[in-house]
Image (cartoon, helix red, strand yellow):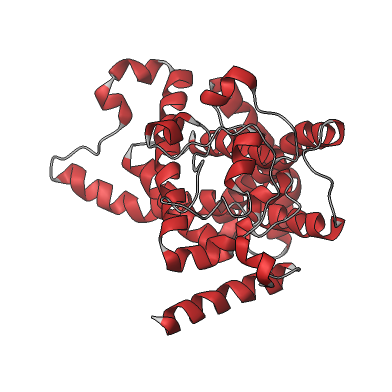
Length: 315
């Protein structure tokens, strides 16, 4: 784990020293050096996520596709979403922003004799086992992600934004980042707040994000793959495709099924699991009645705000 952190920091340092630092120096913006370094880390982390995910998923989607893509333009739009999200890295931005806001409060608490809580307080040995510590953080954040996802479906105003993610009829691994910007920011700040609340070290958060987002992208992939017996532990492409299934993904008692992000056992535990052995068509039910969710990036964003406005007007 320490090796990965050091390798990432070295890569970020190399990119910053070679490209970013000379640029801001030539523009007379050296007062922005610290922010520019953080932005470089965000950019490099996001680019690594895109490369790693594409390297695995593109070949698998060609070998064993779950569906035939009807329109490649839909996929190209999702590629744009992916770069806007992962290279922009809303979650890392949210964590960094909240960290800056939280630090003065943490200092004040320490002056009052109150030490902020961390996971290592419950199990001090975790401090010497960074790999196990990372796994525990992933499990806790994944539980938070499960309930966040249920809120996106069950709160009607939030669904007006989140529906964009489900409106892709040609779902691929690029679809993971097909989100409305307001939905993405709400999710990012929620996850960042949970991460800070459980004491995730700032240097570990990019690795946590990399691992969870990698699994999310894989679960959206257009692959006929259910992970075999591991499907009861991890969210597979088949398990998550059922979540996106038209007339299944936002219907029923819980407004959908299979809400888990990484670990499928959350759905089993909270009675929202659907392990059917099929690869259904994806989309939102009202698309069958002519509702349009947009084609290009900006149209999808605009229509999300329109749906939200219409919802509040109807209240």
